[in-house]
Image 1 (tube, rainbow, N blue to C red):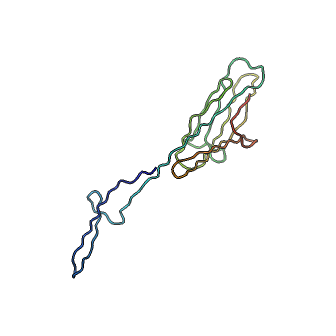
Image 2 (tube, rainbow, N blue to C red):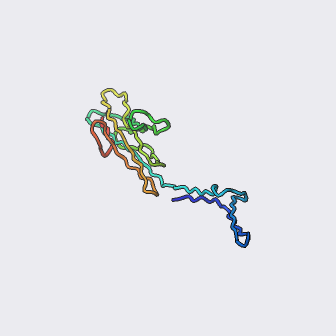
Image 3 (cartoon, rainbow, N blue to C red):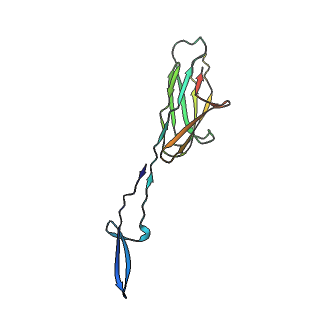
Length: 171
Protein backbone atom coordinates (compact mmCIF):
# COMPACT_ATOMS: atom_id res chain seq x y z
CA UNK A 1 0.00 0.00 0.00
CA UNK A 2 0.89 3.65 -0.03
CA UNK A 3 1.05 6.05 2.90
CA UNK A 4 0.05 9.38 1.43
CA UNK A 5 1.58 12.62 2.66
CA UNK A 6 -1.04 14.61 4.58
CA UNK A 7 0.78 17.94 4.35
CA UNK A 8 -1.55 20.83 3.51
CA UNK A 9 -0.58 24.03 1.71
CA UNK A 10 -2.64 27.14 1.19
CA UNK A 11 -2.39 28.69 -2.25
CA UNK A 12 -3.61 32.26 -2.58
CA UNK A 13 -4.12 33.82 -6.01
CA UNK A 14 -4.72 37.56 -6.29
CA UNK A 15 -5.50 39.49 -9.43
CA UNK A 16 -4.80 43.23 -9.34
CA UNK A 17 -5.53 45.82 -11.97
CA UNK A 18 -2.40 47.38 -13.43
CA UNK A 19 -2.66 49.66 -16.43
CA UNK A 20 -5.98 48.24 -17.50
CA UNK A 21 -4.83 44.66 -17.22
CA UNK A 22 -5.29 42.08 -14.48
CA UNK A 23 -1.95 40.88 -13.12
CA UNK A 24 -2.03 37.70 -11.04
CA UNK A 25 0.15 37.02 -8.03
CA UNK A 26 0.44 33.71 -6.21
CA UNK A 27 1.55 33.04 -2.61
CA UNK A 28 1.96 29.81 -0.69
CA UNK A 29 1.69 28.96 3.01
CA UNK A 30 2.13 25.91 5.19
CA UNK A 31 0.51 25.96 8.63
CA UNK A 32 0.02 29.72 8.28
CA UNK A 33 3.67 30.43 7.44
CA UNK A 34 4.74 31.67 4.03
CA UNK A 35 6.77 29.21 1.94
CA UNK A 36 8.34 29.44 -1.49
CA UNK A 37 7.04 27.55 -4.50
CA UNK A 38 10.08 25.25 -4.39
CA UNK A 39 9.10 24.21 -0.85
CA UNK A 40 5.81 22.67 -1.99
CA UNK A 41 6.76 19.03 -1.49
CA UNK A 42 4.62 15.95 -1.00
CA UNK A 43 6.37 12.72 -0.02
CA UNK A 44 4.41 9.49 -0.26
CA UNK A 45 5.77 6.22 1.10
CA UNK A 46 5.41 2.84 -0.57
CA UNK A 47 4.76 0.27 2.16
CA UNK A 48 5.38 -3.29 1.06
CA UNK A 49 3.87 -6.28 2.81
CA UNK A 50 6.74 -8.17 4.44
CA UNK A 51 7.53 -11.83 3.85
CA UNK A 52 8.83 -14.47 6.26
CA UNK A 53 10.89 -17.63 5.94
CA UNK A 54 11.15 -20.49 8.39
CA UNK A 55 14.15 -22.79 7.98
CA UNK A 56 13.69 -26.36 9.28
CA UNK A 57 16.19 -29.09 10.12
CA UNK A 58 15.55 -32.84 9.95
CA UNK A 59 17.49 -35.23 12.18
CA UNK A 60 17.68 -39.01 11.82
CA UNK A 61 19.82 -41.73 13.37
CA UNK A 62 21.41 -44.48 11.32
CA UNK A 63 22.46 -47.67 13.04
CA UNK A 64 20.96 -49.94 15.61
CA UNK A 65 23.30 -49.44 18.54
CA UNK A 66 21.84 -46.15 19.76
CA UNK A 67 20.14 -46.31 23.16
CA UNK A 68 18.94 -43.59 25.47
CA UNK A 69 18.39 -40.00 24.50
CA UNK A 70 20.55 -37.24 23.18
CA UNK A 71 19.94 -33.61 22.38
CA UNK A 72 21.42 -32.73 19.00
CA UNK A 73 22.16 -29.02 18.48
CA UNK A 74 21.98 -27.12 15.21
CA UNK A 75 22.93 -23.55 14.33
CA UNK A 76 22.05 -20.93 11.76
CA UNK A 77 24.33 -17.94 11.22
CA UNK A 78 23.76 -15.04 8.83
CA UNK A 79 26.78 -14.31 6.65
CA UNK A 80 27.83 -12.26 3.66
CA UNK A 81 27.70 -13.72 0.15
CA UNK A 82 30.91 -15.68 0.72
CA UNK A 83 29.24 -17.72 3.48
CA UNK A 84 32.40 -17.08 5.53
CA UNK A 85 32.09 -13.65 7.18
CA UNK A 86 29.43 -13.45 9.90
CA UNK A 87 27.07 -10.50 9.46
CA UNK A 88 27.13 -8.22 12.52
CA UNK A 89 23.68 -8.03 14.08
CA UNK A 90 22.43 -10.80 11.79
CA UNK A 91 20.60 -14.00 12.59
CA UNK A 92 22.52 -16.25 14.98
CA UNK A 93 20.34 -18.92 16.51
CA UNK A 94 20.51 -22.47 17.84
CA UNK A 95 17.86 -25.19 18.10
CA UNK A 96 17.77 -28.68 19.62
CA UNK A 97 16.25 -31.96 18.46
CA UNK A 98 16.05 -34.82 20.95
CA UNK A 99 17.01 -38.05 19.18
CA UNK A 100 15.20 -37.83 15.82
CA UNK A 101 12.71 -35.42 14.32
CA UNK A 102 12.28 -31.96 12.87
CA UNK A 103 12.62 -28.51 14.37
CA UNK A 104 12.66 -25.01 12.90
CA UNK A 105 14.64 -21.89 13.60
CA UNK A 106 12.50 -18.83 14.38
CA UNK A 107 10.82 -17.08 11.48
CA UNK A 108 13.02 -14.58 9.68
CA UNK A 109 11.07 -11.53 8.52
CA UNK A 110 12.21 -9.57 5.48
CA UNK A 111 11.37 -5.89 5.20
CA UNK A 112 13.42 -4.94 2.15
CA UNK A 113 14.52 -6.30 -1.20
CA UNK A 114 17.90 -8.04 -1.23
CA UNK A 115 19.78 -11.30 -1.05
CA UNK A 116 20.42 -12.86 2.36
CA UNK A 117 22.87 -15.65 3.20
CA UNK A 118 22.94 -18.21 6.02
CA UNK A 119 25.04 -21.17 7.10
CA UNK A 120 23.35 -24.12 8.84
CA UNK A 121 25.16 -26.98 10.55
CA UNK A 122 25.17 -29.41 13.45
CA UNK A 123 27.26 -28.81 16.55
CA UNK A 124 29.23 -31.91 17.50
CA UNK A 125 28.33 -33.44 20.81
CA UNK A 126 30.48 -35.53 23.14
CA UNK A 127 28.74 -38.93 23.18
CA UNK A 128 31.22 -41.81 22.85
CA UNK A 129 30.73 -43.83 19.68
CA UNK A 130 28.52 -41.22 17.98
CA UNK A 131 29.58 -39.97 14.55
CA UNK A 132 28.21 -36.45 14.30
CA UNK A 133 27.14 -35.20 10.86
CA UNK A 134 29.59 -32.54 9.64
CA UNK A 135 27.46 -31.52 6.66
CA UNK A 136 27.14 -27.76 6.12
CA UNK A 137 24.31 -26.10 4.23
CA UNK A 138 24.38 -22.71 2.53
CA UNK A 139 20.98 -21.02 2.43
CA UNK A 140 20.29 -18.15 0.03
CA UNK A 141 17.09 -16.12 0.35
CA UNK A 142 16.32 -13.80 -2.57
CA UNK A 143 13.76 -11.16 -1.64
CA UNK A 144 12.03 -9.42 -4.54
CA UNK A 145 8.93 -7.28 -4.88
CA UNK A 146 5.95 -7.16 -7.18
CA UNK A 147 5.28 -3.55 -6.17
CA UNK A 148 2.94 -4.34 -3.30
CA UNK A 149 4.57 -7.20 -1.39
CA UNK A 150 7.97 -8.69 -0.71
CA UNK A 151 8.49 -12.26 -1.89
CA UNK A 152 11.21 -14.45 -0.36
CA UNK A 153 12.51 -17.44 -2.32
CA UNK A 154 14.82 -19.88 -0.53
CA UNK A 155 17.55 -22.01 -2.11
CA UNK A 156 19.29 -24.71 -0.06
CA UNK A 157 22.75 -25.89 -1.11
CA UNK A 158 24.39 -28.86 0.57
CA UNK A 159 28.08 -27.95 0.46
CA UNK A 160 29.86 -30.22 -1.99
CA UNK A 161 26.62 -31.66 -3.42
CA UNK A 162 24.56 -28.78 -4.81
CA UNK A 163 20.92 -27.78 -4.48
CA UNK A 164 18.68 -29.91 -2.26
CA UNK A 165 15.08 -29.61 -1.10
CA UNK A 166 15.62 -30.04 2.66
CA UNK A 167 18.20 -29.82 5.42
CA UNK A 168 18.92 -33.35 6.65
CA UNK A 169 21.46 -34.52 9.21
CA UNK A 170 22.14 -38.22 9.84
CA UNK A 171 24.24 -39.57 12.71
